[in-house]
Length: 107
Image 1: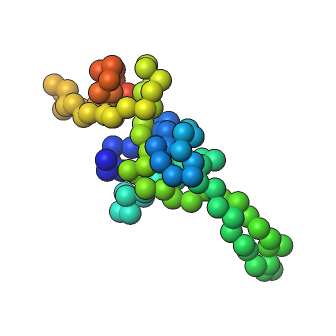
Image 2: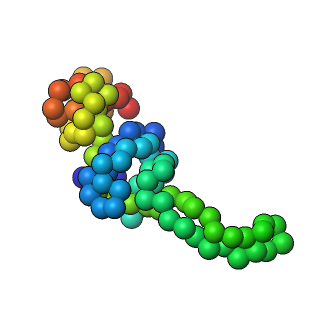
Image 3: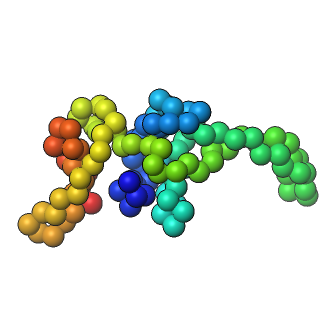
């Protein structure tokens, strides 16, 4: 699955890794690296040195995770599902859940 199928704000479920089973919203997509950043998932600790602006210390932040490890959650069937693209008659592309054939969004 490419990151072109997932968008900022989508609800996704983690399929593998240390955070397997967790769900969260996509904060940021990095299509050139094929990665996404999900809120409260894949949290790392970053040691920051103090400078003139901030005190420093140990910060916790979300790290990018590969797109192949996540799957979008359908709004209707509430499950992680694969998605299909369909072009409407007026030329608009929509994403469709492959399990229940429900429109995920119009975009």
